[in-house]
Amino acid sequence: GVSLIPKNLEVSDREIEYKCFVNIKEIDIIASHDKMYDVVFISYNELNADKNYLKLLEKIPYAQRINGVKGIHQAHIEAAKLVSTDVFYVVDADALIIDEFKFNYDLSKHEKDVVHVWRSQNPINSLVYGHGGVKLLPRNLTLNMDVTTTDMTTTISKKFKPVNEISNITAFNTDPFNTWKSAFRECVKLASKIIPGQKNDETNKRLDTWCTEFNQQEKYGEWAIKGAIAGRKYGLENTDNIELLKKINNFEWLKEVFDND
Image (cartoon, rainbow, N blue to C red; front, side, top):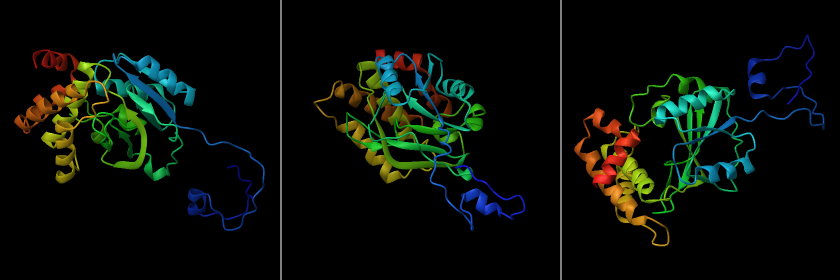
């Protein structure tokens, strides 16, 4: 809020940081509103991208969009160039934001270099974890990220915080290829244990679910299973080969693998 402080009053750094003053008189008048962090919608040839972006705009009218930038790392760098806030939200093109989710997470100044990832719900196998969830990224670290990593989100910063709240349904099952692609990419990462800080028991359980379970009421579940099984095989075979693992970020290569699978 807005504070009126006597010039000769000694105020500690802690009081300023936490906005909690020892001697205070609160005035029941709204004098300001918090500046919201920028929101960027990132898309690349997803079938429902335009429709999902319009839905996002209904909730967040100031959401911006990066579309058609080749390369996952490069698209996020372009998003960071677009924004003006120190941190910014990223919404994937296949994300359907749930009504209860609010883009109002309040960071302390000590969290401005932390990558935050919310949970998403998988419509195919009902898994709920960070895959496909909304992200809150530090702008400067994103601008200067290492573009050679296999998993971008967990390597932008050394500090990573999963947020135990569902932000969206990750509706990637729009057609056979995009369904297969999402399952393949995720299961390569799970099988190869490439993501820093993974818990083996949790990772193995998620991998098994990807490869065996699907909701028959949802479209293209069989393509998710095919992609998951192929991704698990590729990840296990290339655990120690970073160059081959990085191919999962090349969508043209993924299409070739899909066509030959």
